[in-house]
Image 1 (cartoon, rainbow, N blue to C red):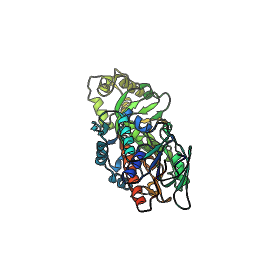
Image 2 (cartoon, one colour):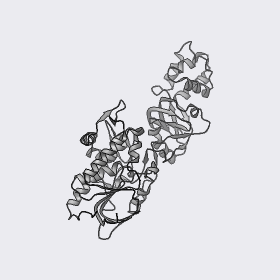
Image 3 (cartoon, rainbow, N blue to C red):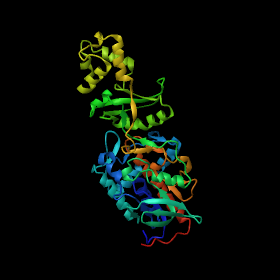
Image 4 (cartoon, rainbow, N blue to C red):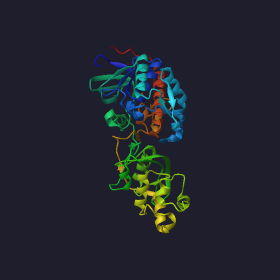
Length: 425
């Protein structure tokens, strides 16, 4: 680092979005691109994604799969680098993909290392210099243009900078929020709230669902107000844990519950364990099991453990039939099955979150090149921005798309100006 005095482009953060940015800047003809990362090992988030398999993207991605910024703004970015573009990119790198029943796309190797190695090879082929562990300590815009970057191993001048440090999720990977503060120091604002997203939820101690650790079931989760008005509903697999709730549907709805609850602490989370039924149809379903115990009926849909736990929580005997249970007690059982309020007391925090909700508003970014509107020459990509997708590869697709735009357009902008010499090695 000490021998390098200036680079045309420095990418801060060598994760998914940062590597994609650097690769496409180099491919577009920019020489001497440098990617800095504070981690001893590059790509920690890529390696743990999808249970170590890396859910690269989803077979179908739309703006409605994301929250945060306006759908129109998100759509503009996604349109520039589609799922088809993503698959073509990795195919050209020798990575074959497979589509699973959920629509998620994984490498056929089922190894996240396949994706990271492909990206690192592509970066090397594009002439990108990856410097790690090199932690960026500060970035200052210079009066005569460009930036002075202070790092743990010395100073570096850059004509352009891309912030790709991630948000605050999985801080051990390097996404500890420092990049967001760098953006603020360079003139940007942050959304009023920056919270964990795709994060498990905590239930109050003693709640019966915490006793079902390891049990999974189909469910619908709803964020509702004090009057029962629904803000959002999501369906999917729900996993009971020793601390509360996990599984795709809990992770997907976590950011929505947190945001709404922060605005109004009377907001509640409800669960429907019979997601295709409402209260009336659930009541009929119970009554239709003439002569059979309620435990037998519930075992048609739930495991033995869960069926017994639901009946116990509702105060109904396992051997009772729906016809022999009084109407009020049957109503209580129906409520537990279709509209049960869950005492959520928080979430597991950024340490266990897969991504970040909130960040730098897209309104402060020129979407045609991901360049800052308030700090010329600065680009922002990936999780730093106020865009977060549901589980299933959507956040990676956002990283690929925003990185592609930033890298390609940064190189195009540089070509309009007199280039600096290639950095000395």
